[in-house]
Each structure stands twice: as C-alpha cells, then as structure tokens.
Length: 269
Image 1 (cartoon, rainbow, N blue to C red):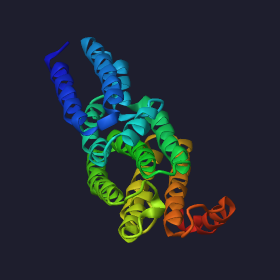
Image 2: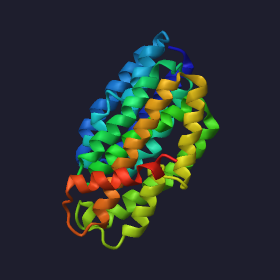
Image 3: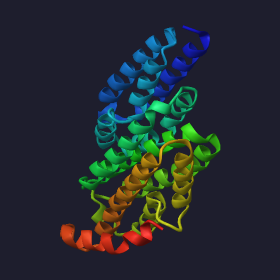
C-alpha cells in the first residue's frame, strides 16, 4: 500500500472515532459497518484496486445498495449524533470519491436519491425522515463531486446549515412526530422548502445546474431520470409540509395526491 492511501485510511478511521461517541444506541451497528468499509479500503489500497476503494466509500456514505444502515443508525442515535452523521462525517469520504474514477456510479447515485425519497414517504417519525433525507442528499452531493468541486462546495454550504437547523428544531420537540412541532413550524417549513429544491429557493438552482451538466456529460435519458427523482423528492418534502400544517396527524392520501398534482407544474418550472 502506498503511503498516500495509508494516510487516507488513517484519517478515515479518525473520522470514525470522532463520530462514535455521539451515536448512543447506534454505536455498535455503525462501528461494524464502518470497520468493514475501512477493511475493504485497506485491501483496495494495496493494488490499488479502484473498484474496492469505490465500494468502501459507497458503504461509508450509505450510497445504494448500502443505504439501510444510515436509517437504522440515525433513528437509534441522539440528535447531535444524527446531525454530525448527516453532514460533517461525509466530507472526507466525498473527498476520496473525488479522487476516484466515478463514471460507473451514476446509476447508483440515481438509485440513492430514489431510495431516500421512497423510504422517506413512509416515515412517520422525525429521525426516520431526516435519515432518508440525508441519504437522498448524499446522492446529490456525490453527483456534484463527479461534475464540479465548485458546485459541490456551494451545494454543501447550502445543505450543511439547513441540516443543522432541522436537527436543532426537531430536538426541541417533546415528541418524535412532525405534527407535534407547534412552535417551530415556520422555520422548519422554510428549511424544508429550500431542501426540496422548489423554485425560487436556492436548492432549485443547484439542481438545475446539475441537470444541465448531466445532459452535457451523459445521456439525456439519465438526465430525465434524475429530473423525475427530483420531482419524487419534492413530493416527499411536500408530504412533510402538509403533515405539519394539518391539525390532524393523519391525512387521506387522495387529498395529498390531488394537492401535489395541482402544484406539480409549479415544482417543475
């Protein structure tokens, strides 16, 4: 193994040790998953074998098909641990991804965004929602890494404070459901609107840049699929916002679907 890859592995393990004290009940599961990823990275660095290095980073970032552990760990962890896991702990693995050939990862990133959106729709507790949101945005962050470091940096600077705000406001609730957050609905709604990518909020323009770059670098079909995944992601956030504004915790699905259909043209501007 070259000294460079060995140093990267060392920093990845330090990143693991920094997160572990914050995770509570999710500690053991997180440690096993990350240790496995670190072992694969160690073997990959001996060649170096870029496929093994890529798989290890996919595991660490919870990229599909390794997304399930993120949902379990965040739901089992304190709020501070979930916030750190959803934001700062991704920096080093994303930097490593930037050094690897990632052309084969486009389909996995698309599936990661879809996984976060679909599973997020069926979550009722706040931590589950935030975990699925984290997985979906990992797909977007990884996608930006493949295209432009400058665009990725702007996206992360937008994403990072919003995630911290979401975890902060969610931790203030006495219960673990969105409908219980009576005092924090306005800031939460604003944060969700930005994260959803609805125009004219900043998240929309970042995704437009991604669509344009995708259409230039890969096939139009992949660009269209990412566009559809983004629309599903908006539906996921829209469901949250309707649930927060509705006085009753339960809402009939056909009312939600009708509202989304009426607002879809505005979402896709």
